[in-house]
Image 1 (cartoon, helix red, strand yellow):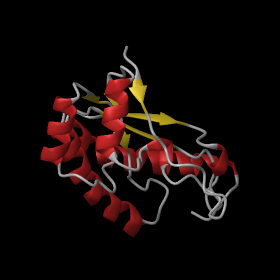
Image 2 (tube, rainbow, N blue to C red; image 1 turned 60 degrees about the vertical axis):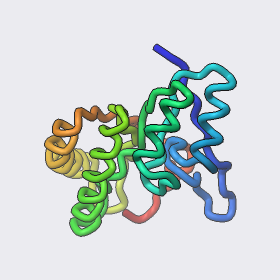
Image 3 (spheres, rainbow, N blue to C red; image 1 turned 90 degrees about the horizontal axis):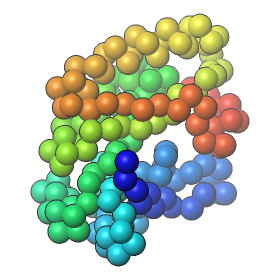
Image 4 (spheres, rainbow, N blue to C red; image 1 turned 180 degrees about the vertical axis):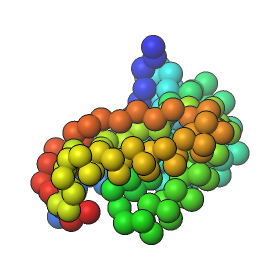
Length: 161
């Protein structure tokens, strides 16, 4: 086990949501790595949704500061429409490939246990079906996923799926 620095933007009261799920958005990756190194953290989370650096640059920065890429955000829209899901799956495939290149082996997210349109059993079956479609991407890139089944406080207010 090792310590991980997770720099997250503040809660945005105007939009009533966190700026990023599970804190995978930092102001500047290089600055986050400098802080992690300074305060003796071993790992740091990656923002692969809106990276400000190329994968090669990220790899060099991690090496320069002797840090491990710990996790990144699992961006697949499991409860979205079929189009949203399929589009997000393509994007996630590239993110998983990039994560693998820098040795990052964990994708994190939360699964809302509710839906405005589906009962619990139907939602569960949808998650199972769609997660099954992600397994080859995960396997090919040696990525494991970790889910929380409740999520951040702001997700407790049902929003349209």
